[in-house]
Amino acid sequence: MRKLPPRFPSHHPSFRTRFINTAATALHQNLRTAVPSPPLGISSKAAEKDLIALIKSCTKKSHLPQIHTHLIRTSFLLNPTIFLHFLSRISLPSPLQNLPYGLKIFQNYAKPNISLYGTMIRAHSLAGNSAALLGFELYKEMLHLDISSDGLSSSFAIKCCVKMESWFSGLQVHSRILRDGCQCDSLLLTTLMDFYSLNGKCDEACKVFDEMSHRDTAAWNVLISCYIRNKRTRDALSVFDIMEKSKGRRPDDVSCLLVLEACAKLNALEFGERVRKYVKECGFDGSMKISNSLIAMYSRCGCVEKAYEIFESMGNKDVVTWSAMIGGLASNGHGEQAIRAFREMQRVGVAPDDQTCTAVLSGCSHSGLVNEGRMFFNVMRKELGIVPNLYHYGCMVDMTGRAGLLDEAYELICSMEVKPDAAMWRTLLGACRNYKHAALGEKVVEHLIELKAQEAGDYVLLLNIYSSISDWEKVSEVRKFMREKGIRTTPASSTIELKGKIHEFVADDVSHPRKKEIYDMLDEINMQLKIAGYVAEITAELHNTCAEEKRTTLSYHSEKLAIAFGILATAPGTKIRIAKDLRICLDCHNFAKTVSAVYNRQVVIRDRNRFHHFRDGRCSCNDYW
Ligand SMILES: [Zn+2]
Ligand SMILES: [Zn+2]
Image (spheres, rainbow, N blue to C red):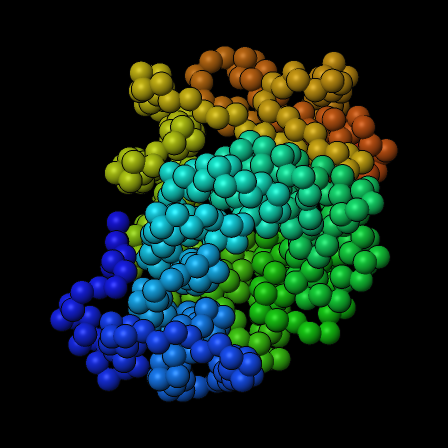
């Protein structure tokens, strides 16, 4: 850990050379000779006011050393109020900031007080990560000098701990807060909540929240973001509910932004619409940020028309707006429109950024537009000067892999300037599965093992490849390996929203209160589908067991349960929307297609990668996912 230099450093040669010709040297000498007492009289009060005004109005970096020299010459630097203003001007973020300079004069100041420490800790908490370390050292130094911490200094110290990613330091500050008794400071406690939330300690963050005597909107918002960050997204919606009903703390624009993000994640369209209504009522709908996140929410919920409606109604559109719209069109299977929107964006003079490029490339990939994708990839690099990142390469690998150009995809990964991550290899593995390319599939799994990133799902894909080419020997080999190593698949889950409430299902779920009705409904659907000619896709399963047994294993995948519940609980003709955390399997895809025809229902399933809009027995992905 970097240490602070001791206060009043000795005549260290490097210290002196660095500050030669600067006013700091003058100060250094001044302090070591006779220290005159700070001017006090009535006239000096007026002078003090003038000096503070001068410090505040200073706009040129080069003027600061001049002011500094003047303050030294007139001994006003020893006036704590003036010194605080001067120190803040130098240290806090502004075009005039020079933090090392600020730190030096602070280190040389004879009687630092809590406000001065607070300013310095704050300045360091706002600068880069290495500065945060120094900020925390300053906090410790302050306590060492027996200066009790206050709410501000502690909250800046916690911000330093967040930047340092030091869990232990944060705990130290928390225990000190308990000792020094600042538990009533809501800003401080909010910062503390954020610290726990960023460290994945959701329960601790909630505990701080519960113990707060006064909770402002900022505290509620930190609670929402804590739930979203720590995968308790459904709880984030409940917090919004409570806030909306409470008289005191109504949700503000930040709450709305956060909750819209939660709705997008959960595919919670009804709730999202409610937030939109609230946004309108409160007059937040003029905000570009809110509109952008409404576009994202609608797109993620599979309502690209409504997203487009908002997009069209916006007077000003920034690069985030365009990227959100292009991304929404792309993931919902409208690749051509995504490309058209990209061209329109360039025409009206909004410069695309790396996220816009990811959006348009993913559009090409989802719609199988290989030539266009290659063209945009080149335009991005050569004309827009954007260095391709993992996402861009991911789209290219996905696109070529889907089109069956597996060797091209493999070569692209091997030629990348950036190191491929597990997701990239997994994309290719999926393509190997689609095209039954066992040799390349094995190679890809080796790469994953090399990255120490292999997951149960990867072995399952490999199993799928072997079973699709009926290589049962290899299948049992991999199964044996998985058993021996204790590799288990995590069950996939599907969610469906009903009247603003999210219902979640895992495969063979028996936890739902209406489970009997759901399973009965599923049996009935299976019967109806059989009449319509649906046959369970047995290669989707792994085992080399008899066909009948395989059919039963397939029957209760989470999305099938969610579809059955949707048909059971909604009026005929209602669109069924489901979100699934993994990729949809071939059999469930066929199942959903047939349901859309037999029950005359639109079914929208968002899986890990894309949307499937099922209608009249067809899917928007053209069976290409
Ligand atoms: Zn399935
Ligand atoms: Zn599909």
